[in-house]
Length: 264
Ligand code: SF4
Image (tube, rainbow, N blue to C red; front, side, top):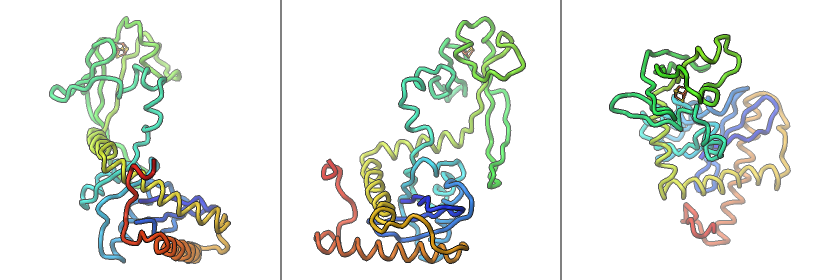
């Protein structure tokens, strides 16, 4: 399980946690969580010589590149999708302009809108992420939007120079990303996924709470990536010793996961 520490400034601290012990740390300069996942796991593999079977992470780590990387390495992703929370909101569910609220017919590769019209594939476009990853998007357009009374609800973006009457509904979708996200989502919603995500929450949030609240550590004392990493490792060791002590006291040394019912 991964999480960033927000012990800023300027550095993005990442901890990897297993059975409530911090097993790996990485310090990155000015980058988003999405882009730390691959270098973090590569370093882990190089030094430890093994790969974790399951990678559990929060929404900030989701990207097509990360999904494909994990698939390629034979690691199962349990990443919370970026739209996970917002997609439960009523406003989101009622938004007929969202692709997720349309029906996709895989056989014909078309989306059906709220008015039952088809959005069919009209082309592709390649986009490049900040990290250089190239993704292919399929472009869909509706040929029957003329005169539709729900256009105002369906077509967003008030900055278009074209008048609404003239506009048609378009979508841009990476099929690879959607496939990966769906498979990932199915894992998250499985019993094992629920168990792993709950444990992620307890273990990783617990590690950062320990460091920030119990140790009172809010800011790195040194500068420079190397020495910040040194501090992060010392904190991790202190955390691990305390966790081990707790586990011995509670006689739970051999136990790796907390069962769902115990968390109540
Ligand atoms: S604007 Fe076009 S895509 Fe949107 S509901 Fe109307 S016909 Fe369907």
